[in-house]
Image (cartoon, rainbow, N blue to C red; front, side, top):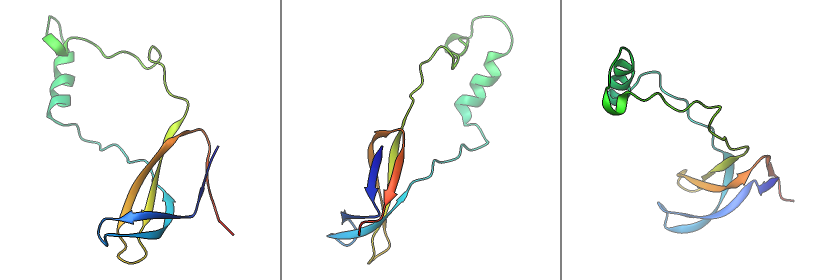
Length: 102
C-alpha cells in the first residue's frame, strides 16, 4: 500500500523555485467517442473477405493477454504561488492513500 503525504516539496518550473504543494490524485482520462482516421479505416477494412494487409488480422482478445493487477499512481501537485499543476508518477500499487501529516 502506498501512503503519500497531502503536501510534498517539488520544483515549480514556472516559478523556478522549490515549493511545498498540495497533492491530489490524477483521475484517469475518458476515451473520446470518435475514432481517428486510421481506426476508422481499420474498422471499415475488417468487414468483408480477402487479404487486406495489416488490416486483415483481428486483434488479440483480452482473455489471451495477461493484464496487470495494479495501476501506476499519478499525482497532481499544485503550486501555492502561481497555481501551476505538476504531474508526478509513482510506482505501481494496488491500494493508495493520501494522509495528512501532523
